[in-house]
Image (tube, rainbow, N blue to C red; front, side):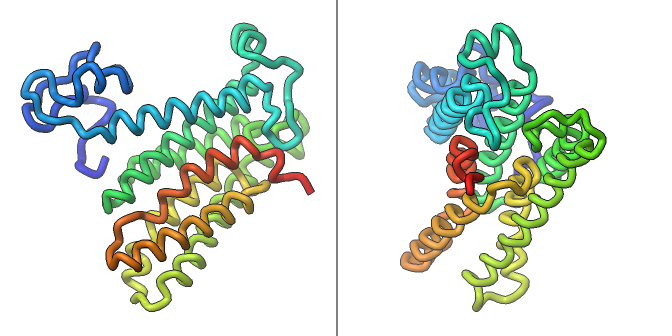
Length: 265
């Protein structure tokens, strides 16, 4: 991550006293509440952002589960993709195709939340995140093309359709981000434009890579409008207070929930 610390190989710990956080204290949201926002060992305050992010992500996963997983993919283009619906039918009698799509989209939301927080903290996106996202998009789009086509991919001519959609989505969204930034930052030097835009282009490329190209115009419209509002807000207070990456996460969640509506002609 930006500080060079691993979130995989080392246990969570207090940045002040360095004590490892106990397993029973490391429960999302509830751990922060029963510790009353302080480290159990040194009583150093724990930023409420941790609990807020955990709560927001939990609500997002539930909302997506309700509209996508439990509906059998009714939110997807051409959906539903299974005759099963409801938690019992989809999960207890596993419908792996829709479960895989749901988990894929949850992974995207998790990555985007990380990118939004990194961007808001004015940090560079770690190479590890870029490599992980690239590897996952490439592997899944080729191995599991139904994540993009939402249909039977047994035919040979559909074998690489998922990969084509992933590449197209990544290229179009990242290219579009540079156009938006060039308009918003028309008076900035090319170096400042590059420094500011690289993280945004990467985030949009990852989004396009996960979602493909179908219907993402709606996501772009929402993001552009919200980014322009944030840009004006930053300009009025004379500081880069809010990252224009912030609206990308809710835009993606809303898009996923209403994806089918966005593709209707």
